[in-house]
Amino acid sequence: MNILEIETFGRGGLIHYAYNLSCALAERGHQVTLVTTAAYELEDQLPSAHTKAQGEASVEAKVQIVKAIGRTSNRLGARGPALLRNLTRKAEAIFDACQVAARARALRPDVVHFHCTNPISLLYILLLRLLRVPLVVTAHVVTPHERIRCQSTIYRWVHRLSPRIIAHSDFDRNRLLQEFSVDPERVSVIPHGEYGFFEQQGETGQEDLDSLVGSTAARHTLGLEPHHQVALFFGYIREYKGLDLLFEAWSAVLEARPEARLVVAGDPVQLAAARRSELEDWATRLGVHHHFDYIPFSQVARYFQAADVLVMPYRHISQSGVLYLALSLGVPVLATRVGALPEVLEDGESALLVEPESPAALAQALIRLLGDSELQERLAQGGLRVAEAHSWPAIAARTEGAFRELASSDRGVLEDQS
Image (cartoon, rainbow, N blue to C red; front, side, top):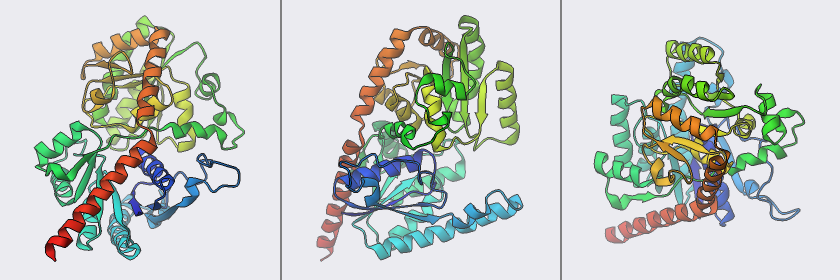
């Protein structure tokens, strides 16, 4: 099949997903073009990990990367007045959507696979439908995390206009059916893939401490000691992720585990300046090692190498790329029992699960987990088994099945019309 993948961020979990899927589809013999942004962060970051023999072209080389989105705003960066930058980004988003849709029509692919996570997705989907392009949409986000009313309406139209939708869990599928009245025949459940490719970062030829593999070296770069018991909160900092709940729990953890250290690393992308300042001040008072900024791809692995446990104190969630990153790298997970997480995680075997919105329960579980190396090892091994079950070859095979179902249904429509 000739497959066109469209991803509109260029960095973070979404491009990591699209990249891994594209490589796995190419490995199955498909011709894959991945359209992404000018800020594509995987450029020169990965070795040819899928090369099967010396001199053989890697799978990555068989995926055509087209950096066609956000070129003007990428050059503008943080320069110029904020109003000008915002207007430029909005105008460019409309132009990019039109340009990518035109490219899709010109390429005449067997299927276009669009990765949907934000309101601009509606414009892409509308244009692709108007151009009669065969379209599959992965609903990485079913509804906006911040519950913004206008955006909820936009997502309703996104789901209504998508000919075939991929959801990452039964939880999300049920939401599509119950909250948006989506025809169940249009929804396929394909779980999230693992992120073990972050292990390759140590092979990129960097010669400083950032490239060293191992807990001691990773902790050294973060100002931590080998004897510390390290809990990690990682990823975009948004209200629904419950960082404030973790801060509320942390004093009790420190009282019971004086050697405990909390590391917070991520971009407060949706937080107001006052809320960001409040959380940063709180982190400072608690002695938290915090880096409130986007963590580039090349620096992600060291945070997980340094950690004894990943903490996910989420108030609500559908699915999480950060979870699969921890599972793939063998980091034990402590998470709240929300969204689709209980579908993936077995309490006491592949993670510890606690009730949401409970700093006391969070503190109790952290105290237990940080002090129990046998439990950490059991959860790490259980997590690795979950990651193995979510390998990209398996995800690609199921995604290919959704693509073929779309092609089959399109043929049926054409036969009915004739």
